[in-house]
Figure 1 (cartoon, one colour):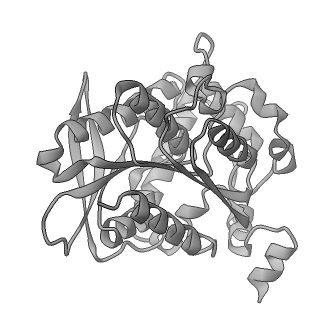
Figure 2 (cartoon, rainbow, N blue to C red; figure 1 turned 45 degrees about the horizontal axis):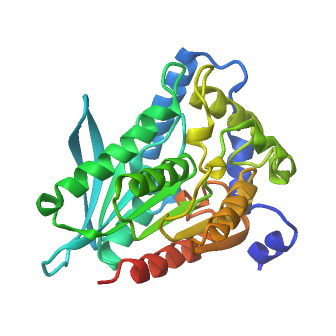
Length: 327
């Protein structure tokens, strides 16, 4: 089987390598605000298109999908809502999902996994269309969006039809950072979460990230390079912003956090961040389940048609949340 041969050779899937070869990378070191805005619009339009389903996967027909707009403090924000079609009534568990991308990305790119979780658990999944990084928008905006959406839905649990005692956060990449910070804020505010699921999560914006071997070993991986990470960090924590409160890996105290599932693609420059975070959680007494997907690349869960490891990862997330969100 070619896919197994590629994994044994330590190579990412051939579909990913082909996509990378056909793509044209901008100059991440010099990209201007205008160029970044054009790139974001073009990329997000593509990720929401029907043609993109050939890569990002088709939604589960057992879930209804709709956009809604939430009134948050000082702003209104879109969220993408996934609700099981065959639910017989009663309160549903709640999963607040945060997509990846950093300076690009949209909740629609995660329809494949979120619709599946909504239909199969069943659960209500609310995916946050958070503000993206830009030259004038730091990561604090996205972090506030994730936390404010979580709070707003929980405060209006009856309206949403959810059980406020069965809540999980789920984030991918940048969304993993936002979800992990939300879990810390939930602990500090007294909101009890049942679980946090972090997929290829970036959880350290400090310069300590350079000390992790995966940053150099996979510096030129096809779906995330260190050049992209450097742009991400420059935008996320511009001069004057302390990265430590926004870096869960550097948090002083991780006790009292919800149990965690960390999904780690091995062909990923940020893979060591998740490994270190799982170790720190365990040292703090938090159950932390870490699963490595050999040969998978960063963002693989959003590309099930070209990365075969996405399907078993989705099944693992479903199994984990089914146990954690049970009555």
